[in-house]
Amino acid sequence: MVLSANDKTNVKTAFSKIGGQIDDYGAETLERMFATYPQTKTYFPHFDLGKGSAQVKGHGKKVAAALVEAANHIDDIAGALSKLSDLHAQKLRVDPVNFKLLGQCFLVVVATRNPSVLTPEVHASLDKFLCAVGTVLTAKYR
Amino acid sequence: MVHWSAEEKQLIAGLWGRLRVEECGAEALARLLIVYPWTQRFFSDFGNLSSPTAIIGNPKVRAHGKKVLTSFGEAIKNLDSIKGTYSKLSELHCDKLHVDPENFRLLGDILVIVLAAHFGKDFTPACQFAWQKLVGVVAHALAHKYH
Image (cartoon, rainbow over all chains, first blue to last red):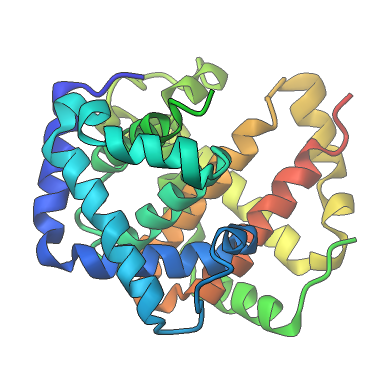
């Protein structure tokens, strides 16, 4: 699966429209992921996962920053996320299936907060982008 | 048998009551064909699917999307017997239509996103949970008679 020039433009434009709210998007993505797919909570036994949790907000900000980094270096996502890829392979070892769940929740957040951004074409491009990010983060698993 | 809490039933019925089935069904199917273009393999007799614009405007896509989402209404009316409700449709999708059940999961995910876009903040995390559960149960029921 390859990101076309159109996909890259769609992704960059979407992120620029989201702008500074991306941190909130990250936090809400995690909140929805924990609520919709409770099994994802198993990776965060050390977190307070209650509503408004500062830890979830903080982690959401990290996740958001990584997505922004990938979007800003969309021609070389593997390079941009290389260290994160190492981290996920060696330390975090989040099962690959969960990246799709996170991706689904991110799209839901974009849909609820900014539906005009999520045209069918942009939806397709963002979905491909999120898949690409997940693939990079699990690339070194074995 | 799937257990539905009173809250889940309320979240599902509440949203369903406010849903424009024809519009959302058409949009969900169109997005499925656009976001996951390999799903077009089942619709070779639908005419022009050559671009997102063509797909969105395609009358057969709109009609079929409405049909698909209308059938969800049956599941919602019979939450305690979804397998029974979809028994014949399951046989049809296996024996006549030859649809890989993975496609039901893909459509379910797309439907959730369409609902999110239509209902905005009202599509709370609890709502998303209930509807993600529903689309999963429907997908499972549609695959149940496969052999």
